[in-house]
Length: 563
Image (cartoon, rainbow, N blue to C red; front, side):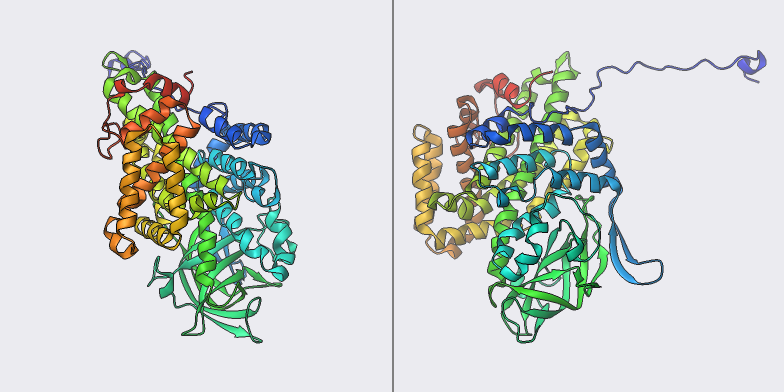
């Protein structure tokens, strides 16, 4: 018998060690005050009128409640409920209350359709800043917001339809009810393009639409077929690609969830079990003669959807920039407060190179995303060149860098970054979706080549403008000249396809160099250009730089105030 039982005594409470040198996650509630680069960019874009509103939202989305909801919405993902209790087909998608709270914050904050109903200068930058702040806490809710925002300019060109859906589309109210459109105070719009056999090749789609009563623009059609990825299937309507007749041209169709008082014949087969983006629903659906309205002209379906994608791709850049920012602050906070080998991690030479690279990557991604958003505000040729030529390159580059940057940030925390209790595991699972959605890497790079071929004057104007901005930056000018020479030497984009990724990468890096040189402190621009385009460039592994060569302390202090 143990001694303590024999003597009638309880065992002592064991304490094998004292917990020290463990750093809680960075969870500051004021994402706005902590981000000097964001505040400066908003001011520079003339969006100072939105500063107070952005700070209020930063505190709201950065609150402990919102952070806890982000965890809950991803742990308890959406569930497909095909039938109601009496056997009626409803194809409902049930979400955790945390999803509704976060999506409601985004909508009520104005970060869905603000730039479409506000005419003040800087409106697109203000919206982008709010979107970016939200994305640092939860990414899945950005998906329905992205598609809804991008649908607005397309639907505005359809007067009869816009008269019915314009007000609820632009509304900041949040209405999660699954009811007919006419009963909704606000609505969400999704997208349906991808099919099993085609993937990114929309021209291979087989979903077919037959006209009723003559068809044509604004006419009603019956759709039969499937979609392999149906983004946000609980949305009130989707913009869907379908071929008009078995061998006809491609069209774009408005396919509502309800047709009048009846459910439309869009059947959800299942929800995707995804690596990340788990709070958001993505589905597989079949159209059993579902009813839809033709948007735009017959045969212009792909062009219509590409126009929509020109906006959604910017959102992918901003979403990825938000992931990089969220990963950076966790890494930098931990490195400042955790000791290793006798001093703080942030003072270790090898670690300083990693943190410096992450800080540069974050600000460069932010500036690029904001500049692309700003370009939506004007119709000037240079702005249009940014939108058409730089956007696909930016999506290719920033979305890919987000994956690498998040993995590096996780390594800064080590095992603490790898476990599910922390933020970084969710961020790393989330990062790849922006590279895949709206066209994977190769699709983006080929789109850059097409844009340059079709708009050579715009491409030249872009290079001329950048050449002026980079005067004195020999390394950047050398890269710009190499890019210009490749474009001139290979006038046919097909002949450049083997170097398409190099073209997109170089274009994105030059765009970031220009923005940092013209909008950020010299220390940031010098370090970025030197480590990405100059002699100090050491390949694509983050942290392979000598932090002593740059103003590392100043750059890290700018990235996140120490506290």
